[in-house]
Image: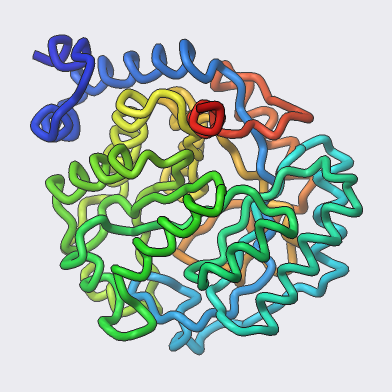
Length: 359
């Protein structure tokens, strides 16, 4: 049965559900197929995105997130422009070729202008050599256009769930948290020419395998260019922490995440898929395992070490006590262990995106 499904040219919802339910033996076949698809489409090259988590100040109140606005139990920070530029210079010097710039979600003219000027400074400093991914939440279309014109060309905005009923169990139901707005933003980003990335949490409260199958179908139907998804890990300072005893075990969430990555690689062979840091919070070699089953993007953290622990989206976040150079050495070793090579000096743009614009 497993080989019959894996040899299909197109997987339907029932096929995806079957693969999500596979036992250990069949899962090994799934992983092997995904590894073969990865090698034959995007190859064994892994691309770095130097991650700068420049602020944990957020206006949103998502029920799962440790930096939600209502959480008063940790220190807020906001890197200076100089600190951000220093991190970008480190990425350029180390030949990463790309950045991923992330923060809590804010919407204001001042925030829009600050990001616009930062992008311009980074492009000037690097001579346009650094590819830039930004993940700064829901914004209006004009803001996205300004940031695109200033030099950002990839945008990651996680949908968290493709189904609105589950979305509103994970977020407040108010004007700041509207599922329809999230979908509209993804469409705006596509229209403006960004490489569009999204993703979901895996193993969250209230979530079923049917939800995850629908999420994979959404990713395929929207025709995303890149994906960032990983296991849900609870945080004690969030409302959803009260459901911690109802969840799959962390190991089960980890295995389910590997299956999601593998299935996505099979149904969308030419996209970029990140090996999420949250995988390593559960398994010491979690990101290497993700590379083996289809992921091809790694994001070494180049945020100044003193701030990493305060960007606490979830508990037990790894590598918070490292500096940027430590993270680089660790990543190199991990990628070699997975049998891949690092695409130093290469932007590593989504092959799917390149095919789309070539049309």
